[in-house]
Length: 260
Image 1 (cartoon, one colour):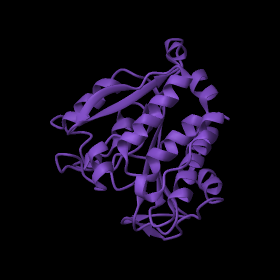
Image 2 (cartoon, helix red, strand yellow):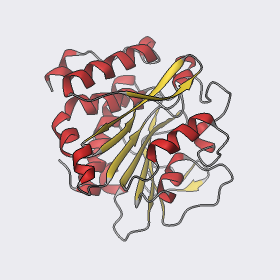
Image 3 (cartoon, rainbow, N blue to C red):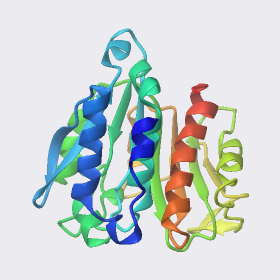
């Protein structure tokens, strides 16, 4: 916690500074005795992931997947993920987490949705021709997943909303959104991005048919019983958006897995 307090949040003009973000992650990993590992490249930048609690995974605990930065024009999720990690070192050491801090570094640097090749990664996670996706699949291959958390933002958002892909009986989304609404209200539109929504929740029990599959669907197909895709409204302040992304991760782990 002391490490998190030692760092100021990025101002608007630095929230797209990928190298600053990586520097922060490397400093965090040194202090937490973790390793930030490159697995692919985006133009001139390495793309990283980190694993925690491997010994617990070896004993049968499934992995908890968390990612941010698929779309580069959504700046708060990578910083919210970092601040969550800085505040929860003990949790990371007690459980197996698979974390992808920024999947689209070039997009973050250029403030664009697409990657270095002009592709929307989140419509290509089922395409074996995309080099980043190929490398990503090699990292997640063979892992038993407990939960998939995908962090996003929406410039059209009027509040926070959540896609919940969950074949089980117990709906998580409303409890999670109740927690995040203490920072940013829910998006109360009845239709969001062309889909029916209720108080910010878009719930799916079955996988929708899509030619280009997003990360959350591929994670579900890889065995994650629940995937949660969170969207904060990018027109709100960066400070609020970072805080609500951090709160979302905390709430998701609490309600889905009973973790503090």
